Image (cartoon, rainbow, N blue to C red):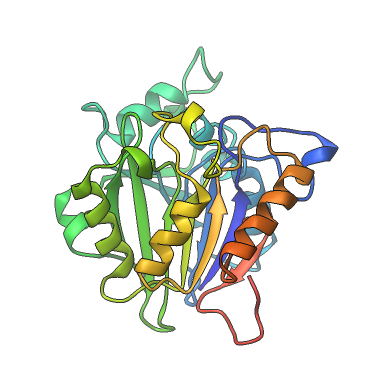
Length: 290
């Protein structure tokens, strides 16, 4: 299993040379299974790089599963221009929890529609499948080819979802938890998420929202984001092997990211700041360093 980081920013995308090394696109992750499965988590502006990678692959497969953590703009803004939606040879499956009594189908058709976007989703040529992630799929893993998928609700304004992807054939597993506020989570929410990360065993990789540093969290309390130090503490308690911190703020240019990355590495040698465009093998080979 491979993880491709299409976008690791939060809030809004940034096109500026000072942000080139860590990337300026917002959240989008591609998971590639050993059997050719392609699973996307979130459709921020990083979805354009995800598509570039899909396009470059020598594969006759013209289908993809897209999971949404939630529907804030920085996690869906790449969806309307996603080229497979315009191609009748493709099938795009979209899945998410219900938010504010709205399904993923409700939200997708209202968002990809005039006046927000000139061409309605209903007129795009791809085959479209919509699925609701219900309580049963939270408790019992769903299957997508050789991948197993579970989800967990996490604390964020309006709600958000973490995903755990496992590949029994290789023994690989990862959790992606972008947009989670640990400091405002209840004891019940914390216990649920830690069980999610640690059951049946700790994951090979945790990708965690660490927008804030431990000393600058208070101005952002209630915004729905955590600190990188909280990510380290969770990873260590849950026997996670490696940690990537994501959802970098728009104030974090490459120079600031270098400083934060050094702080994270000093705090725990198995953790660092995520960079757009990276490909990570899961489980990692002995020589691979994250």
